Image 1: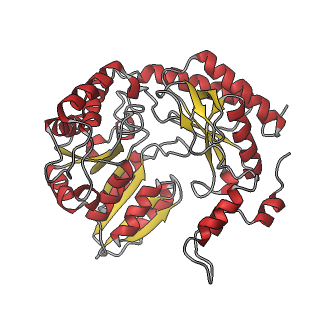
Image 2: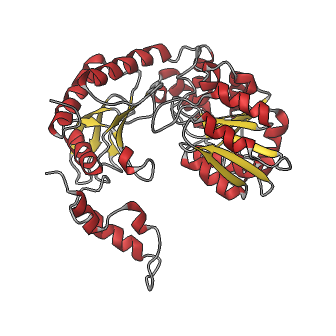
Length: 426
């Protein structure tokens, strides 16, 4: 039976209630309180988090539940959209680099941590985006934190889309800059902020995701470019979920809008469509040079393993020639979206391989998430703090190697549950 909201409130299990240390409590006291809730048997949405995968990233997967039970699932929760993490050419590139350089670099990039393979990767990414240079970070989260906190400071202002990734906001806080936020994709809201900035505040950076990770929609980069030029701002685009997927040749949201040469900082992760690990910023030679010296998450982090860089070089060979399977991915993505809409689900305004299925009711979300996994469909759960509770949803991610039959089966199971819980009309 669906847990009533008043029962949830009575148990005081909201995420934000466990952030602060209570009066008279040791700093580990909140850890005890979280453990008490998670051990209570009440659904919290955490039941499927931390599942152990038993095979390579692929549509037909096996996962191990927390109780040790292993079972099959259709994987609709992976960001490896193009299945490049298991592409033979990519795996061979990783093997060769592993044999030559070992499994770890043992030093930060500015010391003895990079190889010719790393430099080749940076050159390939720069060429892909049409920029002078590129810096590769060993983590995507660290990339955003390092880029923003290095380039912005107390004399600057950063203007964010409200739906930007958490790592961007964390970088903004670390920078010490003034932070402004406009409603999601609201260009009038953005201009209101820009028009009110003091003339003396000349250090201005607009930051937006390219493809937004929770909604799957795209930023209006054409409009953002116009406003940036009008109000003398720089632009940073984090296109983690767009590179390799959107745009006429898969070069991302900026290519989709025809503004690749207007973006100052082309940022992306190497762990989504690329299927690897890390993040990067492609920009001018001078900007990249500055980041190598001032981005603390780069300067003080051990370099990306050569095996990962070797695999990513092969990834970018495929992306450069648009032979990574983007067209096949879109066939599966469009098929999934149509099936969901035909079944009666609200999937928002997705323009990517991210497909939200709106639930709007957190207790129902928790139960559907649990039952989907039990019936053999793995999806991601999204609620506070990633989105507002009243906008909670399941997030489905398509992969190139999904079969139409697997999509049919997954939608069939999802539809049965959607009807059972009143999410769609019977």
